[in-house]
View 1: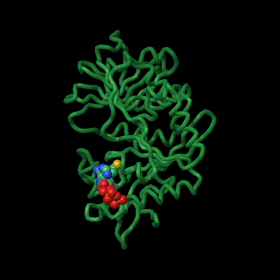
View 2: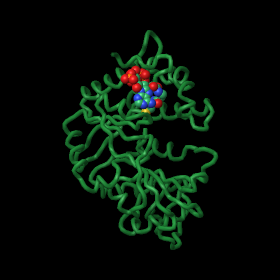
View 3: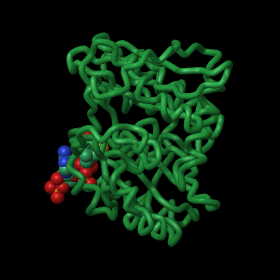
View 4: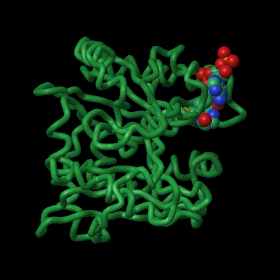
Length: 321
Ligand SMILES: CC(C)(COP(=O)(O)OP(=O)(O)OC[C@H]1O[C@@H](n2cnc3c(N)ncnc32)[C@H](O)[C@@H]1OP(=O)(O)O)[C@@H](O)C(=O)NCCC(=O)NCCS
């Protein structure tokens, strides 16, 4: 089956009105469409075909978005493709369109010499497993705020001018890790857009850092979710032993008077900076992974054999597509 590029405005007109109820959150349709255009028009969105699909006659039968990522494994670099927003209009479901599209995409990525394809499933993973994807650990970590270091953190709000420092702090943590998705300046633009997008009205963004002079020792980006009595982190980082040691106090101050701190179980090295807490499987946003090169198969084996990796999840929430 032929995969075709869907022009951004056709996607806005034909697909977004249908997916708005699923993924629009509390945004109205116009805001949802403008948020889509902002990514589609960005340098990152233009780097490769962003919205693709298969057609039935002239109309779109199934569609998805493609995200280009580079994955570092020691000195090696793996080329990865993220797939998001897999969607078939209700009237066309059950005819094999999504399966055919995903199968053709896997073939296409393999032929293009890429290494793996990943996505985050909101449906039963069996659908993607049938197509050759495997499920990677996808868990939530919950900590009691009272179990975290309660000494005054001296935390400050992150301002616009701090993002370059946040990036350096994140780089310092990633440099300690054996593998992970690279965060180039282009990727940071995309991550920042996601992390700073307004959330539901019932949540409050809380982005904090602890600095020494002008260096960010540790930062956290997340939101207070009052109904869950929790501060939910999307991303954090630390620089060196001092940053690592102060992360728990930073999380405690982000929680304020809320009882819990939670978030995706972070990847190795980051995970070890946090107390054990309680860990449970996610019911949605399940990480799925399909190797399309021998190098990706080798990483998958190394990950499965690494005991530290078993105690942590492979990806950050910020990697979600
Ligand atoms: C999931 C979806 C893309 C499948 O599209 P489709 O074109 O009907 O898919 P196919 O015809 O190739 O495959 C149909 C299979 O999908 C499976 N499927 C559909 N919804 C599913 C779900 N929630 N959980 C698991 N499997 C599901 C069906 O069981 C069916 O398999 P079967 O025919 O053996 O029973 C479509 O149902 C959809 O757009 N859903 C809403 C958006 C969504 O949730 N997307 C996935 C985000 S991760």
